[in-house]
Image (tube, rainbow, N blue to C red):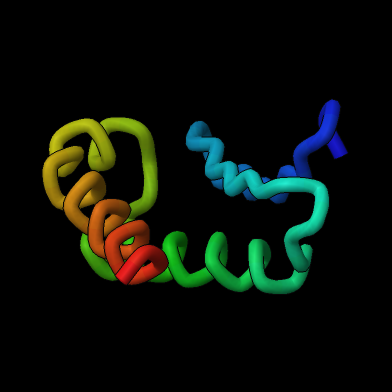
Length: 74
């Protein structure tokens, strides 16, 4: 918990992934969203999840994030 938000995170090498939700959100769902996003980024970057690869492919990562958010509000 951070203030009135639930925060789940994952640190891999030099990248930090965070998913936040309201205090009434289910932590397991947030953790599943984080793991799904991390797995998708790993596939987009062909298993080489580091800062340089992430910056070179930031457009793909942001598109993946957009699809996750769009799917949540559809």
